[in-house]
Length: 223
Image (cartoon, rainbow, N blue to C red; front, side, top):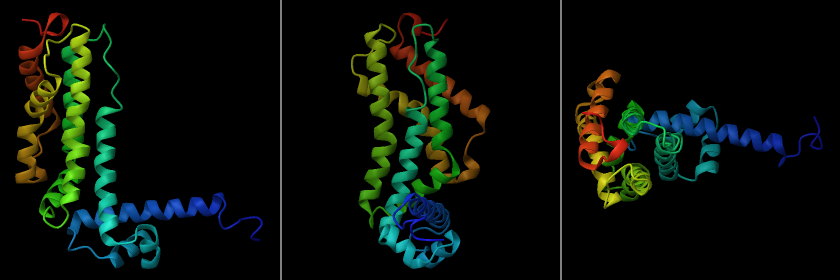
């Protein structure tokens, strides 16, 4: 096959490079989450991804850069799933049901085993990589509370919530929903993640308490 048919910088070359990059990231995610930062070596990532160690370094430069990429990609992806794939509530939507779905989605995404392992790993490496803790916080709790503050401000503007300070309301909602299950799973391991039916009950109770404080009109749960 000639170079004219497949130029080095053409679409096929770019596709191969993207596939190699994806394979490296998938392998690195598995190896870092299993062995931690210190327990991971680039030879193992190269072998698992089916490329040479030189190719791994060509794409990412260093073990640290690859680790940063894993943390950024996983936390950004989780945030996208929670905050960008849930439609804005309409006037006809039941607000309590909408918030229960929002809370349950947040719980099920954050409490996936890989994200819990990542959180533990980043916390364990905070002295070595303090910037990764900032990435985790920015793409996780901080992003969640910004998104919720914006949502609650819009709902207050349409008369569906009684919210004077959207940021405070967002903090209350976030920790009513997230604090107990996430702390339990962080400290006790994957086996401590509650089953789906328990997460739904927890989400319902968190939303009930939130609406007791901030509900108004159609947003207040029925007595």
